[in-house]
Length: 337
Image (tube, rainbow, N blue to C red; front, side, top):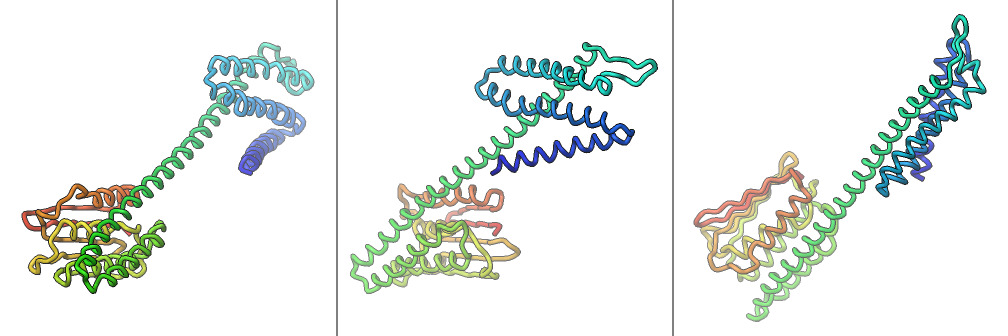
């Protein structure tokens, strides 16, 4: 269907050009002369254009037969000159005779040389059009490949996030079950709500920011159960987030990192989660007290993944600042929603 549309468009363009030249030429009062010169010879030149555009260039350049391509183009130009002269002979009074006193008959050599230069022009035009078309096609293919690569990489990073989070959460529930805590069923329920969100909502390109915040709240509640009420978390939200959207599972890594590698049981240094929404921007800050004990070989996997996802899904639209001192670890993310 695209080829039909393209062919139709080409036909309209050439027809418009020919009719324009016929109209301009006929203003001198000789319609027959304009039809012969611009229609008959125009069709021959268009044929030269498409023989080179559709056959010679694709046939020889794609197989890198450059010598064959050059020879074919030369033959096309020379042969088209002979065909044009043969046609001109039938309309010698119009094409080969110049209105002068006395009338001057154009010689074969003079006419043939002009035809060759005309053929060279249309060959050059078709070659430029062919290279431009190939460039656009290759650019489209390149962008499609980049998009496919991007989608595959994002899917891979997301597949790493889910098992990583599930592994940590199951460890927490295992601790509650081992201690025969009455809060184990509640923890399992919270985990099921979280997993439902991860399985159903996170497959979307973007989700409502309110759902992502609810997901964070469920995670925090799950962590509080593990700490038996001894966890100190302050979460503040300001601004209207009901009409905003965000890529799913972007914020959780920062909160998870604070619980896993920080201290949540110090009332003087609680884990602080600050969310602000204003003028199309999201401000997200997580501050936690550092711990020298909560270290493992997997440290930083979640943050590394979320940084990579931000690079892929919010290129040039976010600013991430991670800093620390002797006591506190501070993550600050500013994101264009």
